[in-house]
Image (cartoon, rainbow, N blue to C red; front, top):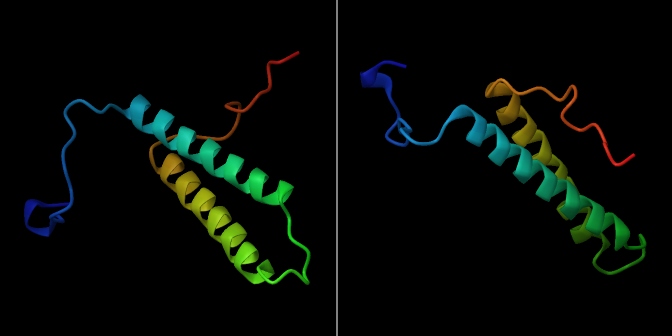
Length: 88
């Protein structure tokens, strides 16, 4: 992007490196996945008065996860081996 086409919101980071950015996005993805899990644990019946709001919330969380994954990939991250469970 040239200087004349540069967005007024762009900023050249001096102290925020690529690894920090990736780690930050991964942490945000993990937070969103936990939120999704919590919503699924507290799943509402279709007859519940707040079911439609619950569904919209679930859809919003999934959209946010997808958005964050897109950003992560733009930063050069991949989802190959990051999530290997080493608990045994």
